[in-house]
Amino acid sequence: MSEKSQHGLARRLLKTIPGLLISAFFLWRTFFPHGHPAISRAQLHSLRMVAPVWIVGVVVFSIASYTMRSLRWKRMMKPAGTPFRTCARVFMTSLAVNNILPLRIGDIMRVFTYAPELGASPSFILSTVILEKLLDIFILAVLFIVTMASSVSPHLRLAARLAVGVSALGILVLLLGARSLAEPLSRLFARFPKQKLLEKLEHWILLALDCIRQIGLIGTVFLLGETMLVWTFEAIIYLSSMKLIGLQSDRMGPWNCVAFVNLSFLIPSSPGGIGPFEAAAQKSLVTHGTHPGAAALFGLALHLWMLITITAVGGGWFLYHRYRAGQHESLLEEIETLPELPG
Image 1 (tube, rainbow, N blue to C red):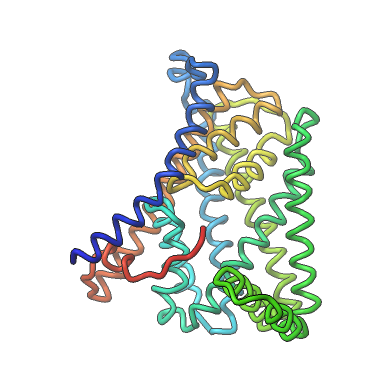
Image 2 (tube, rainbow, N blue to C red):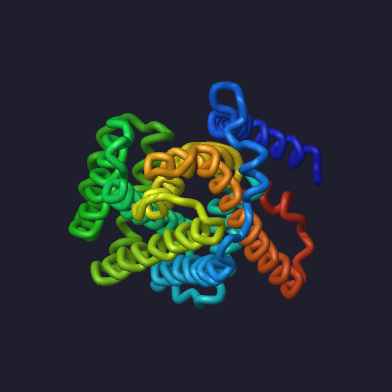
């Protein structure tokens, strides 16, 4: 690697320090509240499979969830005619990279590195990533509101309602005005002084409009249904995992947990969302009747399962494809050529 590349990589890694500090803060608050461990040795020793049959649920719905995510992105990429296998490989690779490298580099690779393979421009791919996040936030925020316990703080209730409102408004505006909004928005942005941030904001909004316009109203309705299935399957993973180890909560616990945990990924942190994931899982399950120590241990165990399996599948697929294609450039050298996008 050249000296310039090493300097650029060091600069990127330096930017991860705030995220690492945020992760450390959440981990400390989760596992060492009030300065002493939340998980006792007895709880650690008691972590075992009490109903092994639920492994089937964990495995089957893990496969179903990420297959459905790949199908959803395939539908977004329909105007480009990208095959499902390519969409699935690139999507799983991006998740694996997000788990091991900072700054959502996996998403950036999806946009820029794989654009030729996907048969689409980076601009179009970026618009699908934006739409993907918008749909996820909407469904997860609705799920959180429907399943939250009465003891949830007013601040979290307000934040969830704001997330639903903003994402729903964004989806409705895009659906109802994708064809006619581009020109008025361009004229609106032209009235402001030229600034880099405003130019980027205009660019992203116009990309999302173009994506919606090409996918169409019916296609977007299907995407919303697929998003509901994605998070239903994900919630069944949580439910199966809790049954597997005999963790107790009320009926809404697993559903509220999956919503809160995945909304926590909006918080900048270290790769894989380490810290916010565990904290959100504990806080959610405690409000639904689970012991704090047991809830923290469950969050840690489930997160490890997801990190290991997703990284193994995505990373294995990535290495196999590179071997078949005869690519020899290192991943770090490939990443160094990527432009930077805000998290």
